[in-house]
Length: 293
Image (cartoon, rainbow, N blue to C red; front, side, top):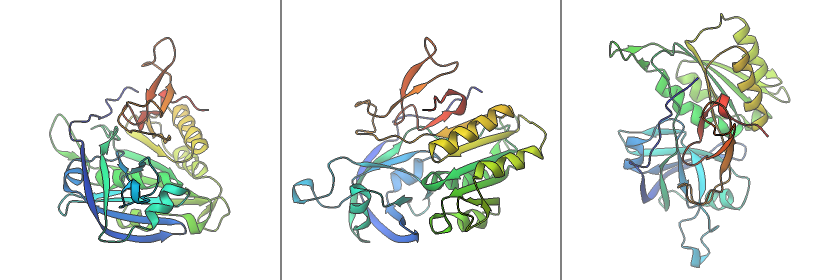
């Protein structure tokens, strides 16, 4: 599959954004809402923001030096708000957890490439795990509106099937948000405390086995690397176009520091391999281009 993944820094903005909501959504997981109309008006599913995790300046103990990248869970274009969901795992997210409603955080965005839903998509299979689930909600919300048919200029209906994976029920996020969209939702947990006991990829395999291979079925994947690798391999065996959203530690998020470079293979590689930056050429890549480690 060759897809023109949408990217660019033309709509990039940096500003201090007021926190309008900050609440727990699952064990160790929190929803953070920020008032930032320029980003809310231009961001696309799959893109991310680079956020300072404290409202205090560095010289006053304002959290870690480096920003943290967070994929966009949703935007409200009318109200001009952006929403991210994060899990508290280290110094940066611990600092973010202490931020109160009404305080302001410095953020840059929207950054990176976005998911692409071509006009030929009639069935979208979304596979998410852990904190890789939120950007897929933004995508699903867009897909339920239908895709634009280039020839006729009309929106074509898309059937959306969502497969969510988590270690346990307490860490499962966004399930009810997806259900409110009216899409088909399937859940798997490692310990069986919610839905199927096992991997979300197992559920996808069962689902695809009931379908005839079709170029109108596209697969979108975001989550832990082993899950993405297994899901991408499954899509390849079925001959389905697939896109993955990769996660890497990054310093600048603007393509300068090269700290988030990953190896890429496939038809776009030079001499059978090359490196691309997750922050600018990614985070969304064609699944066939990913080199899994």
